[in-house]
Length: 603
Image (cartoon, rainbow, N blue to C red; front, side, top):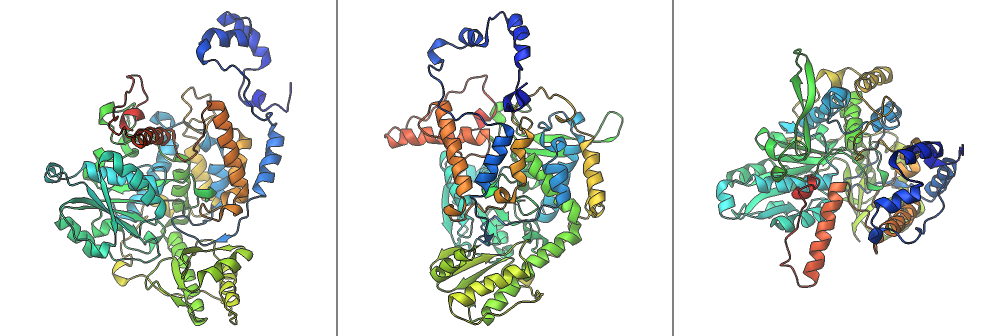
């Protein structure tokens, strides 16, 4: 047996299996079987131009060489992505554990009780921190969740608003740029008109059905939205809030102020940056909108013996509802990452999260104080983790990259700095040194964190969170390891058994393919770093595009969508845009076979 062959170890069938299999189907060879089953008109007439396949060991050497081309600098760009610490107990026992990463989508509750409990923890964590009544088991990313919030609010408009075709959706100019891009993509086909502006100038006109706010804002400021949401309620305008989940430990929950939907990402809860994803988004709303919520909700019920049991209580998945009732084309969840984020909350508990959030806030306040003492002006009067220094940004940018530090530069006069869970005193002094050196000032050294509070007192969090027993029990590594193992034993995954179901899962990934996920050279890369710092990523992505283009026979490939359903949606949008570009916008009918996958009608 060729021990170097990846295919022999993983895909099969083995050469020794072929004669028996061919005899059963009545074919002389694999070639003959292919000729008999694939119509000649679509049969590939030439060999694919692809590189020779690597062995596992060659691949691991190759991926390590590529990783070395990524320059992982200390990065304070923020904009919805912040380096976090993955507790090793979670990395080893969930991310790197086939008992968790090979399990199939939990359709069969009786063989998925462990994962369903882990997802229930995730939902509880989200409802507690957002102050909402229910949350789903995660979505693809914050931008997708925001687009789904817009779609939900459009669907649940008041009867009068539907009659008067209220189709305007107000977007705060403080929204994250990637979220705005996706809102634009999703608004057009459903007939929603986006209006972007300053929420303080909003007139609450009856033409609007909904609003989305960012909390804290893109610039780092923390706004008090209490009065805004009250006025929106009076005008029957529903409000979605995109909120940083770690900040909600310190900030009062949007649900407390009357928000209708709260969305965001849980990446800060122990999930590697991974050049932008994947990460588990969250989506929380009110009980009255549960029939319009995207994705799935894990619910608690009783089994036939009266024992507590978990199930997928609500979902927009095509196997479970009428296709024409689908409210969203999102058919799944980021289960593995949602499980990790939920376990991060279980491990740290309310006191641990309070410590982390306070440390992040105090780090930002300490940095602001130090830079002000050096003579710089800090523009954010309120903030959680992001400060804005007014200075010659080009000088800072030139020097900081040489010192392997990345900041965000919204304009030539502003340097935005977002600190995170991993930022140390040593890092703070490195930042201070960059600013001092850029302007020939004498540097100063920070030796301890200040304990300030730059959050408006009206939005300081007063409501309790994570009071459930599960968040107050497993705070040592041994306790959490046993809890994770207890849940794992309740599940069926590939380390127990063959799973004869479809492939929209990670169950087919070999261990060698999973190893790079734990490599900081891949994991700690922020998506908005200058492109030359991500040479390894760029090379890998370009190679994958070229391989897919060769295999599919198309002219080019996009790697943008985060799931099959999103890819299908993106494809429809491309076809639609193509017709529009040729002056044929009237071509708006799409045929769907009755046998089509259930996400198709929703798309």
